[in-house]
Image (cartoon, rainbow, N blue to C red; front, side, top):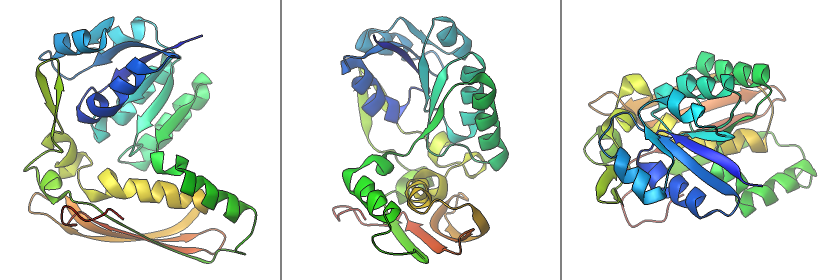
Amino acid sequence: MTARIGLIGAGFWASYFYLPFFRDHPDVELVGVVRKDEPGLENFKRAFDLEVATTSVDELLAAGVDGVVVSSPHSLHRQHAVAALEAGVHVLVEKPMAVKRADAQAIADAAAAAGRTAAVALGWNYKRLSIWAKEQLDAGRIGRVTSVTAYKASSLTAVFSGLSGYGVVDVDGFPVEAEANTWARSDAGGGYLYGQLSHLLGLGLWLTPAEPEDVFARASFLPNGCDNDIQVSVKLADGVIATYNGQGRRPWAIRQS
């Protein structure tokens, strides 16, 4: 039995990863995509043999899908995820889940009301090393955790500044690039915290899964208002003190940490 899957937000990451992955997966029937405007729709339809390529979320959902990936700009995750859940469709939301707590809660509430799954694409949690670490912690092999320090660095200053993308994906002659409207708008979830540190927070809060009781953060900002250096300190309910640090200024050609 195959799962009928659609994509809401067919931008760079969807073009680079999700669409080729689903197209080639034996248990997936790739139904269609939603993009914000019409240019490129026919290119996507031809390149991935889609039933639907549209600017309308409702049109994709009406085509009949079992699940959708929401990979639209961060500030639209709530709108698109809730629409899919209310239509009775399972949802995988790209990280960050949302840019506001109320938006994340609305997605969770919609999933509960619909009896459907809403998951967040935190791929680091599924790496073999991460799973091994989780097993060791859950088994108590290093004793009670009291302190967590985590660090991540990326070469993304130009992206968060709105000066460049990650590169270009060719979709049947149509170029697709990471857009400044997604990554470099401070009023729409642009910057390092949402774009990159969300990976580290997702992993850390899974490894030490107590509820945060107190959170403090500070950042330095690029001229466009997006954060590029971020520190988040968290006190968890079980007494763990955790610090998550990240920055987008890592030089190219250095192994990512």
